[in-house]
Length: 163
Image (cartoon, rainbow, N blue to C red; front, side, top):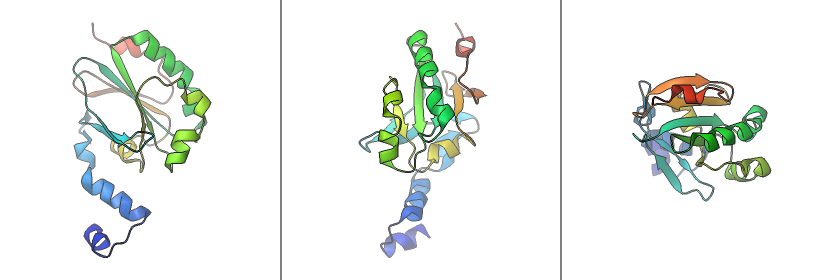
């Protein structure tokens, strides 16, 4: 179906989604509980690829600019970011319908974000991570293994850091 749409030069939303999934199958992003990489776009639509770092834990925040609890949690996330020093890397994935929404919705609150903020254009990453609702906070260890999930901003992230 994808090849046919390319051959006939059909360019629409569903073709874009098919193309995205063909290029980045779910198991190339998140496989059997292990994060392989995070793929998305920044506010300028540059492709961003992040991989697990054996020096930092990772807290992935699957959210949407249209989601009230997602926006409300940003100040608490900023506190986690500031208090964790270099031990935890936060990454926000925004499953927004278009770039304008990603960039402009709740800009005043998003100004608190001091970590990578990625547009998950078609929900590819959220789907791969099995984030079935928002917000979803997923904590990964140093090897990229998912060790905990929360539906509210986690209060105990530091408990998961092995010292």
